[in-house]
Amino acid sequence: MKKLILNTVLLASLPMAAQAFAVTFKAGTYEASADGIHGPVIVKTTFSEHKINSVEVTKQSETEGIGTIAAAQLPEKILNAQSTRIDGVAGASITSKAIISAVNKCIEQAGAKPEQLIPVTAKKGAKEEKLSTDMVVVGGGGSGMAATIEGRMRGLKVVLVEKMPYIGGAAAISGGQVVAQGSKLQKQFGSTKDSPESMMKDFLANGHDLNDKRMLSLYANNVGKTIDWLHEKVGVKFIPNDLPYLAEYSHRRALEFQGGAKTMAQHLKKVISENGANVLYNTRVQKLLTDDKGDVIGVSAIDDNGVTYTITSKAVLLATGGFGNNKEMLSEPVKSALYYGPVSSTGDGHQMAMSLGAKTQLMQYGKRYPNGIEVSPGKAKSTIYANVGAFNCSGILVNVNGERFVNEKASNRHILDPMMETPNKQAYVFMDENSWKGFYKRLPETGVSHEDADKYLAQDGNSTPLFVKGDTLEEVARKAGINIENLTKTVARYNELVKAKKDVDFNRPAEYMKSEISSHGPYYIVEQKARFATTMGGLVTDGKLNVVRQDGSTIGNLYAAGELVGGTMGDDSPAGANVGWALTSGKFAADRIADQIK
Image 1 (cartoon, rainbow, N blue to C red):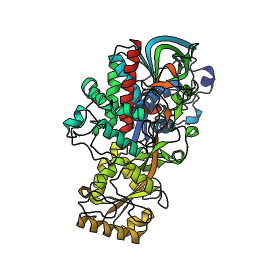
Image 2 (cartoon, rainbow, N blue to C red):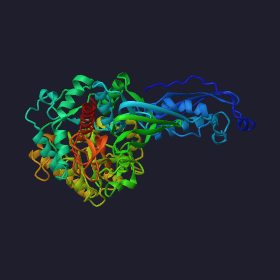
Image 3 (spheres, one colour):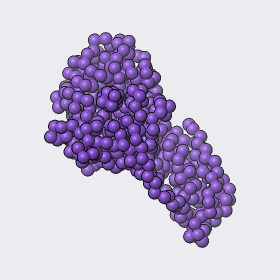
């Protein structure tokens, strides 16, 4: 937990209109709390008779680099406005609401009503800035960060433009695994027989052979070198282990970031802050600038303070991510799936490039996972690694009828498809106490804190997400709305298969069937719903990641990387593939741009 303190800010006198109806406070210091995304956010607020003198976030456990940004920035915004009627920090809405709610409670303790506080607005003169650089990177997710770092390593002047108040994008909230086929670490950790051809074969099978084979080949033949670069030159650390078993792959080829994806992203951010790149936060690119030939010569952008930028550049790399948070661009079935991706994935890069005639492909596809919990209407969090903890013991997946329907250690795709055929299109993780411990331990790896889990259990099945506990099979099944007779038979059948050391029903590997389900409670059930974040379709690019027009020609000086580039995965992505593609394509594009310029 971090204590974020903002010293007293003395503001200029209030405008006459506000002074005429000045609110009177009971001078003093008050403290209040509100629920953030990972627990209580506690705020201390000090008042004089007619002014908010200081706001201090004294306790919080919000997501590093996202919620913590709100905790750092909102106190000053509230002080400057002398009101809580302000916009929250983009991408950190839950933390922003918690801070504002806690300050409102303090205002009420001080004898005033929050709605009485008219925001003080400072007039800002319009300002324009002109910049010139070698490469503009639009978007600071995995591909944008990799490109910025490699661009600077190649000696380029780089301007990174990010519309959010932080960088990291989807890469920072990914599962923490990354494809590493062909890397030195893959071989060092024991997987020595993998190859680009094997990787391509696995990806084509997973993507139903819809993959853009040119992009897939580029990926398979460059990802190993990218991982070596990340490890040896950028300093990203990986967990030394025997590599996790993943059903999508014929070889063990996914490394795990030490400290998870969040730590990896924080390290890349630190490298960027030290390598001389010019990073413009809270700045949205509005338009690609072109010359008379239609070649891109820069971008125009505007920041949250109204400052406009005209940035001329020898090359522009679009690394704006996907469009999962833009319902208008989505097709079913992903359109109706729970969304768990970044709020910034709104298809900005797609739309800017398409305005210049860019060609797209596979725009109807998105990556759905079968292991989501609905934390708020339409919004999900993942239990993917918590499930691993359960299935390493005796946890099983059942449908609403209380029946097993799948090999729990199958690929996400091969769990999702039959899950969507169940009566209510969802599944349930059923666990005894030992399996629950394995599940509970790993929940924080994908952003579900232990405080969250305890809160969900306390709801006792009366609201989403469904987390229930029962001392008996009958009790837990009743709370979850699952058929008890069938669940009892399913548990008995599973234990028979464990004794036989072979799952003849669904072929769960024997190494994950070593423990019988306990005959004694307590038992636990957790919902599983389809979740979605990553779009599979996007721009068509050539072998240098230069953006291609609908007529087959390339748009001069315009490149794309990461999720924005469509087709690499086909209609679905295997584990660790998206962040691997982001980092690989970002570095690759920066190298092609450096080659072009030099």
